[in-house]
Length: 193
Image (spheres, one colour):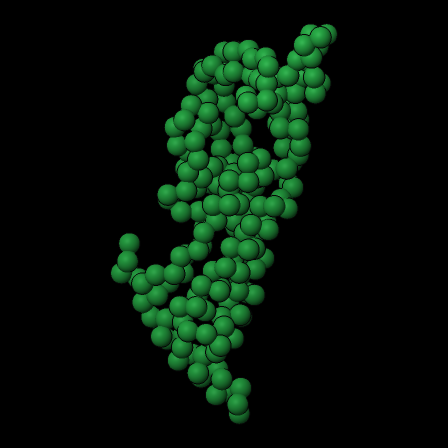
């Protein structure tokens, strides 16, 4: 009989959530600077990765930084590119216009499909022990953790050979970790924007 009472109490608290909602994802304000300094919306990058895309890149200039052994004139670190502040050699190159093909890596949809039952089953217990706002926040944090874990472990499809050569590793979705760091949680009233 006590279980029924607990469920009834949880349902009353759930009803108290009326007007409150939880959002989890990459929000509109999350950006980082492209090489030219212009902002790039991380949600756009996540969308391209989730569904796949063809991105047209216009012709542009890039400066490549390397480290040279000053005595022999040979490249150090096997000629790998390094950060500007550690370099003693730089060259500027024109990169022709090209198209980048991004394969679909549905990390977001896969995470929802794999975890939505667990998230929903956890809500009544959270409502028994917490206020409606806190229960929604905790649920949102659980969803966020699962999304970040999905990004951090995604492997298929792997990066292309050219991407692996450029980045030095095969870690799809994790080049800068900007996407994982941008996952946020918001609890708000329905009438809030």
